[in-house]
Image (cartoon, rainbow, N blue to C red):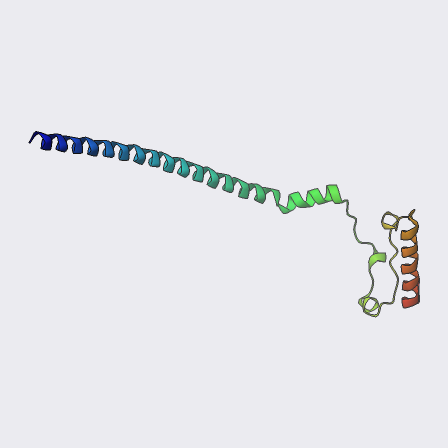
Length: 129
């Protein structure tokens, strides 16, 4: 009888230890879950903030102002307009590039030869230039 009582007491102590361990693990998992929920909420808030930032930065007024400052575009001049028939047939006034877009003078002999041969072949193909 005494050994049966000791066995029952040992089982009871084991169950208490198992229950306590289960309680500790459950609290740790609850803490992890709360931290994940907080992190998820923070990420959600950050995502909303970034969407607002993109919305603010992509305003047409802001983009137009920035384009005026940095691109320094000019209105189209009448010399740049060509009739559609001239575009289709390939005739009409040729557009002369501005000095800022002119081909740079090549100091490299091979590059100069390549450009010269491409210009000569363009002259023979189109018959102008």
